[in-house]
Length: 117
Length: 301
Image 1 (cartoon, rainbow over the protein chains, first blue to last red):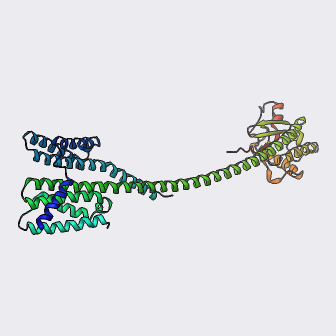
Image 2 (spheres, rainbow over the protein chains, first blue to last red):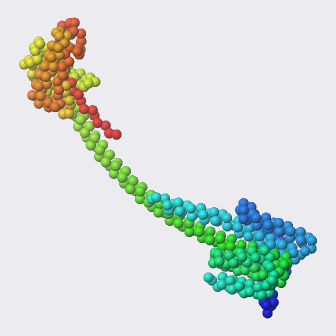
Image 3 (cartoon, one colour):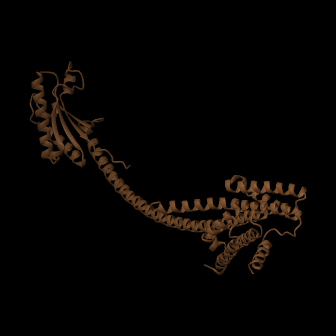
């Protein structure tokens, strides 16, 4: 009973990951777009985002090497890791300027509210 | 807490129990421990409310990693799936933080706008009050200027009347404008007997005209100066000049010139107008001068 539930959950979870049935090339392509997006958003200039961006690039290279070495399943997993890192880099790069804007607006509002009439 | 969040917590608890049953002795890899801890933290943080969809996707990844751990506790796939799950949890949190930052920014912009409007309104009120005050001051200055102009016109009219009256004295006196004022010079020999200070009867009609001219000047101050030639001692001449000036002053006051506006001084022989070595010169030095000290025309600032 426990084993049946475990397999069901695993299959369900795996359907949310990068699909094992997708070709390696298609999986590889899914990392290019978020890596490019992160770079365009200036992830290199945001420390937290820069780390994840670099990880995504390194993992992409490792995945391509694994593919060349014929280790298809391992390369798919590495591409999935790269995609996850790249997507996080995009989110962190988007967050940084919005947070800065929010803090600046809050400071301006506070200063103006405290200015004597 | 919404339905989605409740589902996430319930299913994670169920799976944890299953994992515990199946792998009671296996140690999860570092990546899985981190992912579980991060998910636990995220479930209690803003992501649960602000980004339940993102957290749900992350939960599915974590379930996948847990399932892999059940199958193969030490395998590379378990570590990779745990790593991916951790990233997806962090992604859900980052997206939630961005949403919160956007909301904060929107609120701050609204607050800023409201504060700006308030400041603007106050500034307008102050400006209006300031303009009203300036207008009132302008009116006050205009009135003050009008009063000043009127006073100056009156003074000018008075001055002209006085000057005309004084100029009319030229038929028997010398009238000259000097820095000290308008000077009416009366010959001593016409006014007094030699060595005397009592007025001769011939002098009175002339002094009557002088009095009439002085009374035209409503605000002037007058000085009657007695002068002698150099014949005789200093003390004698000084005393004579004072007495003669006083005689003329008293007569003029008697004729209506206000006493508080006229005074008498004697200079003896100390202020000659010409040389004393001729009879004519000495006659010219023997004189009474009446100085009319005029009021300055007022100006506005």
